[in-house]
Length: 165
Image (cartoon, rainbow, N blue to C red; front, side):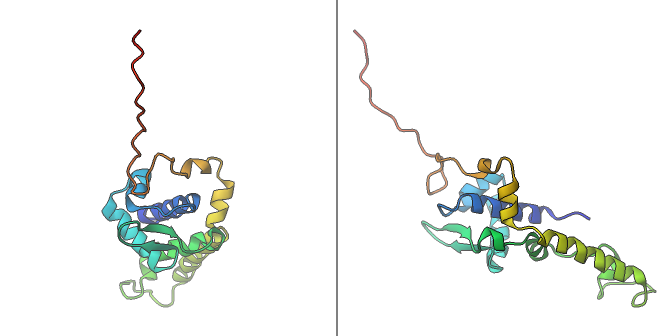
């Protein structure tokens, strides 16, 4: 079983938002920090926002912030929202199964329990657990060199007189 890249990046987006709670993150900031295209990032953020994991504000000065406290964002809930399906075997797709044994086979029950067990295990953990137990979670905080518009800040220049004597 493997989670889709979108789910992996959804976790990263939430971690980034949680570690930068003192400000609203722009698409540009998150794109640069995560190495994701703006288009892909916007799709993921829209899905996370639609399910209350993020709150977003459009337009100038807009951005994203966590929609819930980190302790209330369960990892299994995020996976269920982000994953298209968890069909380990064809018989878990009721509408598409061509299995002659569909309906009476114990394999369907076992695979369904396996998926449910996986999600239940993920739900034992929250975004807060990731942040408090990660050794380098401070590395997720965007450096102060990012301005509010997501562009790297220009270094301040000082006009020092030439010291030619």
